[in-house]
Length: 147
Image (cartoon, rainbow, N blue to C red; front, side):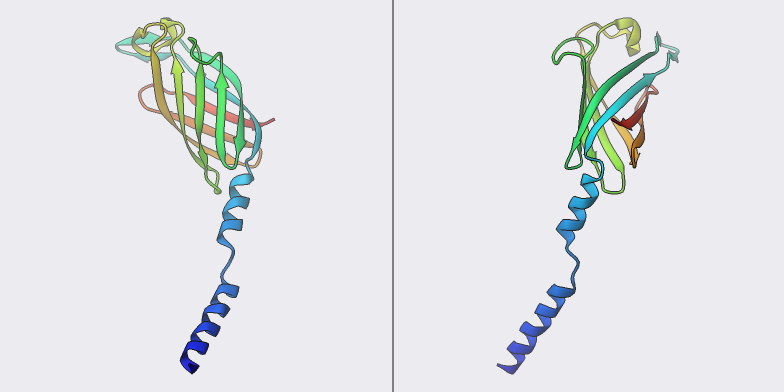
């Protein structure tokens, strides 16, 4: 009986001393919550097999509970982009862009209008701004500014 009481007392002391993990995690992810302005810049792609033209797209995004969601254009139509992903409490982000080709002259390998595509984006957020880069064949940069 005495050992059981000592064990209960020790567990109670440990529980009081442990930090509140769920509170700390929520506080970190909510630091980026709110409206953001996204600028996607893809310079001309001068590869041996194509000469895709460069472009710049600006669109809004929103972050809720650390999850970013931004859209450009009309869903399901050519020139549509959907940018989604999680932002970690330290500001690192693994994002994904899904889109639909509008003009083949701006697409790698002159992909035809209406063709869906997707790629990963590595990004970092700090305070009221962030930057990101497309992962893959074509170089594209992202900038994020809190609205």
